[in-house]
Length: 178
Image (cartoon, rainbow, N blue to C red; front, side):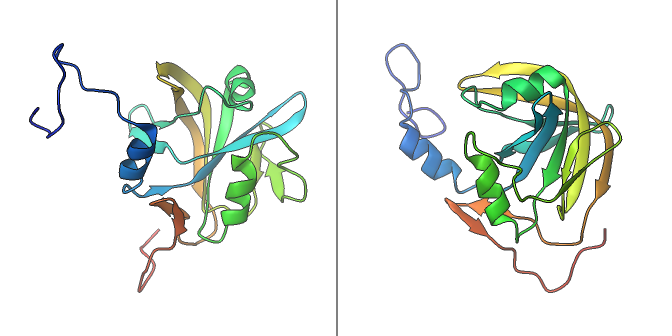
């Protein structure tokens, strides 16, 4: 056994982890949900991501991890600018709409364009506008690092949280200072 409690084969390698177990165990880590948006020649585009994080204060960087199978990510990567729309706890339907590949994601969805033409979805709890800084290969995903160009809070709300395969709401007694 290795120090972490997993078995190691003769070559010193860890056996491959079955995807169902991997997803189940890592589902015990709660994440927020965002929609990454951009506009290309066809109009506004976007997709849901749960792998989003702050990365650096100096320079200000964030990251998200799009799947290599995404049909939207290649266009956002080519444009090179995007907005991270942080979802509130009442935006499950919006989250699900942007999680599906293809289809008219922006149909009947309220949004505005910023000065650079990036789509900002109505009623999100924060907006982080970025330029693509770096992209790294990472298995069946890529790690996309964005340099923050502008950011601002949106409406006051609790975040949309995903935990153990379900949307969750935070229990709170008062809102933290903004």
